[in-house]
Amino acid sequence: MKCQKCHHNEATIHVQDLGDFCLSCHNELMAELQGMEQPEVFPKNLSVKAADGHRHRFIITTMILPGMVIWRAVEKNGGYEFVYHARPADNQTTAFERLLEKIEQGLSYQSLESEADGPLFDNAIEIAAAPFSLKAIGTFRIDYDSQDDTASLIIDGKAVALADWGRALTAYEGFNLDYQIRDLAEAVLGPETVLKPVSINPDQIDARFKRTLGWFLEDGFLSTARASACEDALYDCIDDLKLLCQSGDRETAQKLGQRISKRLLAVENDDDSFPEYLLTQIDAALAL
Ligand SMILES: [Zn+2]
Image (cartoon, rainbow, N blue to C red; front, side):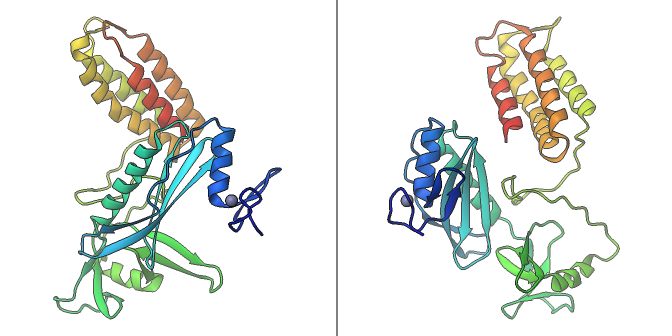
């Protein structure tokens, strides 16, 4: 079926009550409906070098939806995939740069370690006749082939069978493996990154926020000299609020966000812009 706007490209997206469109016409329509400027044309193809020296080529697509712009990079002839969510009101050039940063971050760390020069372990994962072991910190995407009814893991852009992964894990026999399944749109692991348990208990986030704010107040007053350091310190608490919103209860996160915003607005200060930056960050953390 042809797109009913340009009558040229194949229609791939159906919008209820509006019809069938190609991606580019769909985006034009969605931008128009939300009073958003038409996004510029960004490179559709790009290549990025990974930690192992190989270049990976990506196809970039943008999809505008009500309240959200999805930026997606899918590897050509490979399994890497990265997603960044922006809001229609955000600067889309910045969103494109964030996606690029994410690709670079994701490619700069590999979860598999080449064992080509080492002794061959029984539990090595074999990919294209080359042996690999699993590093103690890593990430993969879960893939399911509904035709074959088989699951596999995409590690460093390569498909690894579940059984092979399980065998490679035995290198760590007796250790614990913690896990957290996250949306593709969330931050990716890179070099010098570890996973650290963080409490997303709302009372603890609230208490931490109050304590941090307290460091910068003198008799309840925030001087302009301390405002920017205070904003930096509170930024980490907003990060925890974001985690609560994504992995915990969304409604609780919204209520806590409102309470924190109210408290910030009540802080007496002589700074021109406090607490505007923090309020926008809180809104952004709770919006996506
Ligand atoms: Zn079209």
